[in-house]
Image (cartoon, one colour):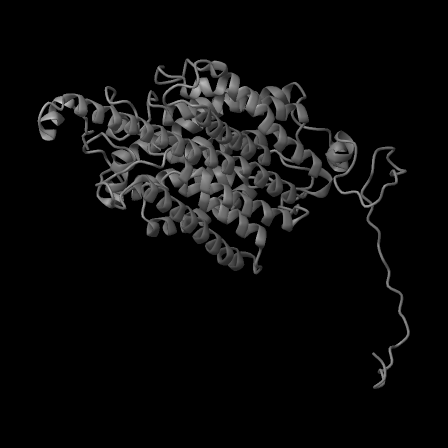
Length: 509
C-alpha cells in the first residue's frame, strides 16, 4: 500500500484563503506524528524480539534438565556444566565471529564479512536485540550436539567443539538460509535470483539449527563409540536408563515453553499489516497461527509415540513420549509459518515414526546417543524440511516472503516441485558441510587423545573423577573411600517385623 504524504501546496487550497503557513504547520505536525509512530513500531518490534530471545534462551534450562535426567546420576554435574559452557563459550565466539559470518552484510552468498565484535551495530535492520536472538539460536545447536556425546567425553573437547560450532560451522549455514545475501535464502534481495525460483523456506531452523546440531552429534558419537555396557558381548542393546524421569519431563515442558519464542519469534517483527488497515490480516495473526501449528505438531507426535511405543514394548513410557513431542517440534520448525494447522498434525504424526525408525536403526548399527539427539534433531529436522516443501500454502508463503510474484509453494498444495528440489539440496548440503567440518574436528580430537575419557573414569562416573564429587549429596561427611568431596551414599533399609496390630476399641483413636 502506497505511503501517504502531506504537502502544504496540496493542503492550502482546501483550507481556503491565504493559508499556506497553516497548511505547512499542519503538515509538520503530521510528519512529527508519523515519525513518532515509526519509533513506536520499532519499539514494539524490538520488545517482541527481545521477549522471544528470552524464551529461546530459557530453552537452555530445558536442555540442561532434559540432559541431566537422561544420563546416569554419576554424570549429572558433568552434563550440567557442559550446558552452561555451551551458552558461555558460544556467547563469546558468536559475538567475536559467528554473528559476522552469519549476517555481516553486505557480503557474498557463502559467508558474511562485517559486524565482527558487533562493530557498526546498532544500525537499521541490525540492532542489539537481533544479535541476542540469533545467539540464543546458535547455542541451541551446540546444546543438541552435547547430548549425543554425553557420559564419555572429555571436558576440553566440549569447549573446543562448542566454540567451533557456534563461531563458524553454524553461522555459515544460517548465512546461506537466513541472510538476504545467502545463496539459498528465500528472502534474498531482489536483484539476485532465488534457488530454483523459490529459495529454501526453513523459517525457524529445522535444517539450520536441528539438522546441523544432529549431524554434528552423529559424528561425535560415531567417532567416540558407544558407552561401556550399552551393548553386551553378543551385540544386543542394553538400556542405560537416565536417572530421573522427573527432570526429563521438566526439561521437556521448559523446551515446549521456549519453542513459542523459537518459532513465532522468528518473524522478528510483529507490527506488520498484510491487508487493509483495521483487518485481522497482519503479522500478529501469523504469529498466532505459527504458535498453533507448533503446538499441534508436538501434541500429534507425543500421542503417536505413546501408542507406537506401547505396541512395540507393551509399556507407557514417559521418556519416549517426551522425545516424540520434541521430535514433532523439531520437524514443524521449518514450515510452522507457512502451513495450516491440519498439516501440522500430519507433520507430528510422521515425525514420531521417523524418530522410532531411526532409533531402531541406531540399535541395529550399534550407535549410542544417550539423548537420541541425532535421531531426533537430525532425522525429524530433515523430515520437517521435506514436509514444508510438500505442504507450504501459497497465501502464507507470499505473506511471509513477499515481493516475488509466482513463487513456488508446497507440492501437495499445487505449487510444483521446485521448492522440494531446493529443500532436498538443502539437506544434502548441510549434511555435507557439517560432515566436512565437525567430522575432522572430532577425528582430530580423538587422535590426540582429547575426545573420550578413560574406561576407569567412565565406569566411576565423571562427577567423581573430573568434578570433585557427585551431584547428589545426602550427607556432609566426606566419602572415606575416595578422599574427595561430598559423596552419594545409598543404603539398604531393612524393615523389621513388628507386633501384629490389634483392632482398636471404640475408645482408641
